[in-house]
Amino acid sequence: MLKYLHIKNFKGWKDTGKIEFAPITLFMGSNSSGKSSIGQFLMLLKQSSASTDRKTVLFLGDSDSVVELGGPVDMLYEHNTEQMLEFEYNWDMPEPLMLSMLVNKDNTEDCLVNSITFSDKIAVRDKEIQTLEVEKMMYRLYLNDNSNFSVGMERVQKASSARAYKTIAENYEIKRVLGRAWEMPSPYRFYGFPDEMISYHQNAWFAPQLNAAHENFFANISYLGPLREKAERHYRWTGFIPGSVGTSGKDTILALLAARTENRLYNYKSGQVRMSLETIIAKALTEMGLVDKFVINKISDDRQDYEVKVQTKGSHTLTDIPDVGFGISQVLPVLVQLYYAPANSIIIMEQPELHLHPSAQSALADIMIEAISAREDKKPRNIQLIIETHSEHFLRRFQRRIAEKKFSNDKFAAYFANNDKCPSVLEPLEINLFGEITNWPKNFFGDINGDIFAQTSAALQRQIDGEK
Image (tube, rainbow, N blue to C red; front, side):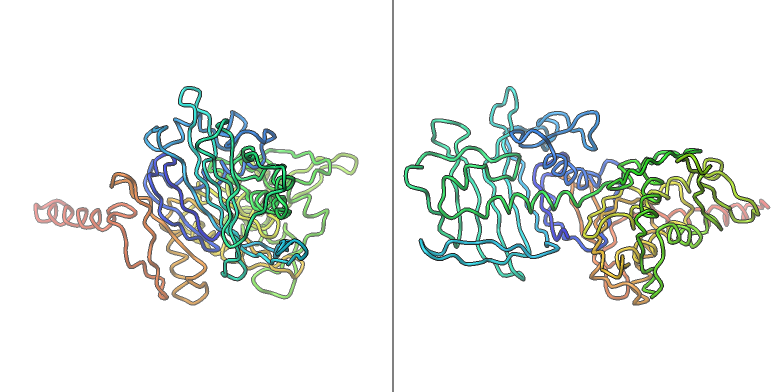
């Protein structure tokens, strides 16, 4: 689970400040306020960690990427290539990591780690071709919030090669192998200790483990964009098991069919009865007031083609999903991803409430509360949600559940991207035990009270003037 993130000099953010995350974290703000950039930054790191080119520090994307940022000049705050991109984040590990440390020349000691903080400084070295280089990266390793030691790499400023680095550490003495006195090569990607780390040092066997832990962290992040694909009349499934519903939801029905084949069962609403994913989705759609029935049928026995049908409220017949309201097809990927995502996933979603009626937006908040505490095959799923939203109804349902003691305020965080100031400020909303936001930004969701007052005043004046 991501605990906090701090970014400097990225897109519209000079400094986000320390963003502390909860199991459910909301980002709100006006258009072009920078709230989308938080999720974009995490996806930038994810696609960089998965890049096949280990020499590329950050993969800024192409036409097939979730994030496409152009060049470094487009990515940096105010397009200033003289400044460095700086960031730091901390995450808790699902399972503790056991590192073997060399205490002296004859003895090793196991070091248990269950939390990692990573910090990075990335500079544009060649201003003409805009080559990105890691200036300094550092891992800080913790067990139950107690720091064990830190280790990282820093670029050697006065070296024969601009890509020469030295190993740095705190609370642990890194020992060089005799005859390996020359500088280390550069890190791979933005976070990786190079292969030479082990051969150059006597006691750095843990380096590949830290690299792998970092890659596993980003492998657990998924993203669902604001524009989901429209529903199809037929779906063909060949047994493919998707890792998620996809960034646009195109694999939603395939994920449902895969869950059916794998017999994935969930404890819904803290109940003892375990349900299939299809059953949970049908219940969720019903609770949101969108449909009375949801089914996936195989078209014929000799073909792997399926159709999705729903029974809308007030109807007595099943209808193909493309023939009903657009909102159902847009929220379906959201609902499926909430439960289909593997345990320990971090799910980033943009505007999951899009095209939904206000009452359905509120109900969606309840479903998310349930999703993070649901169990799969009797095991906790440990799901974290990072949501960008424009919905007041969505936010207020979380506030209500906190006040009703049905949802703890320590499992919820919300931020407001305020671009009325320059540079923009990311303001944490202070939510107390009663669900009250004690520091509402001015005109947070527009001037609703002002509109009501102006409408009432105008109506009263027209009546005074004799209009009926």
